[in-house]
Length: 451
Ligand code: TRP
Image 1 (cartoon, rainbow, N blue to C red):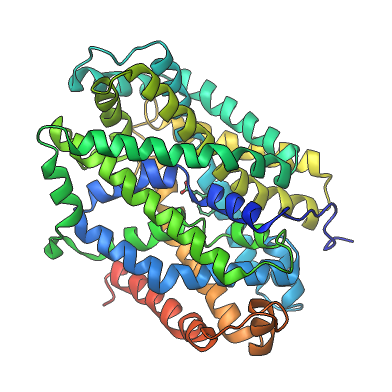
Image 2: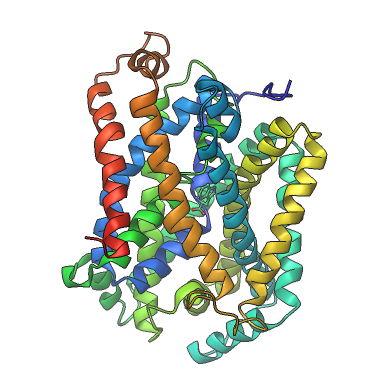
């Protein structure tokens, strides 16, 4: 029975699928990682490459993952085993499970930081503090050996709780109200930010590309972040796809999710960069950027304390609906492939991930001297998973659907058995067979200095 899904449920409605998938896509990637990648990689030029990666590579692979998931009705590894028995394709799923473990280990740490900031906001701790003091506040917190661990543990427990209550019930309910609310708060923040004195420089940084800033590392980071932000390349969408009902339009769902995700990231950029420049914060500060910047903005808003509370609460929730999809990939694999009871699988998966996460957290303080290939543990896992594992997984998924899957099967899946028109099929197949895999391959070669 190893390949039989045990208790498979289906999302209630199309809107439920979109909400859950958008809940997975929209998270710390949009609001924490996107701004710091933009800041580190020179601004607008990075954004252009990022958008190109989404349009020419990401979108097609999102569709491909949904197809693999719904057609097989199985988890990331089981899906390949089912659609390509007696072959090595399942290794792609395995790479995905490893990537999910890696990502969630540092994701849980950052999500923990949002809890600390929610706590600080509710104590009104930002008020009256200068940008310098807020900077010190962050550094003191992350280098504390215990405090971040406590929040990380809480976050991982909440993630387990959500998965425990079932994917459908766990996510649909939470995203339907809170995600639109997050969107509104970001828009209001953006409006406040662009009207800050000196904020114009931030808008220039975001929208006036300096193409000389582009190099191999920038292109790889943009590609990697496109995958990270879309929750792509490790089988999360395969797993969610396996819960999508046969009557939903996979192409339409993919386009909607990709659009939502991209709009939110850009809006977050608009909310953050004017403030970065207005308060003289270093755009290339890295993972701390958002935490050092936004508390300055909250203070400038009427009812500042409430904005901080609302924002960090919603960011924490957005992180949860994303982490659920990561833990679901690992849990579905452990329970369905290794035949372990689902409850135990959740616990074991989360335990391993949390322990690795402890090292990520400590690498911001007590273990900051431990460098591997010039990166601390946190940056190494982030870099390795987002920039290498995800695009690699995506490349193989693209090849799988483009070359291994029969054209008629792909058509059947996209048209819901002939009910929908799929005029874009030739274009999609071209992208999956050639454009996306070759694009990723050349970015790898470029980055390795081969070309
Ligand atoms: N996309 C999420 C974010 O932007 C992170 C995430 C959730 C993810 N599930 C994933 C990234 C699967 C890669 C693969 O925060």
